[in-house]
Length: 120
Image 1 (tube, rainbow, N blue to C red):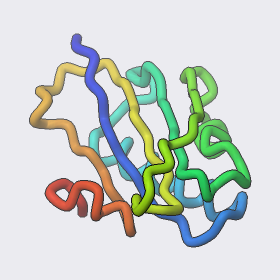
Image 2: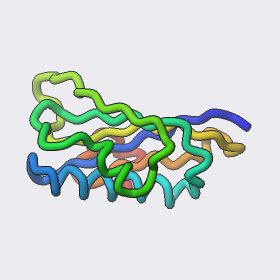
Image 3: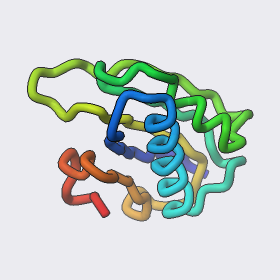
């Protein structure tokens, strides 16, 4: 079994607890469903948010989804002038037998501009 990483991002409409948690849940659900991830295969999840978002830790959404045995970490995204705002990003590490080419990275809503080649 290999360790692989899955990237994803989503923009949220406002800096509120509700908007951040809803966006994070939507992003995690899309990644988990599209990659057919079993909870037992999750190793860790790293979340970052742009500096304009601070109403809640995005990891709260993962805990609310039942990911209680997965190590989670939240951090701030580097505040590069002119970069995408209101964005939650994730880096998920999993145990898998999939090839790297089989991994589906997910970029939703305004975050599609980050990787238009991978966006749905």
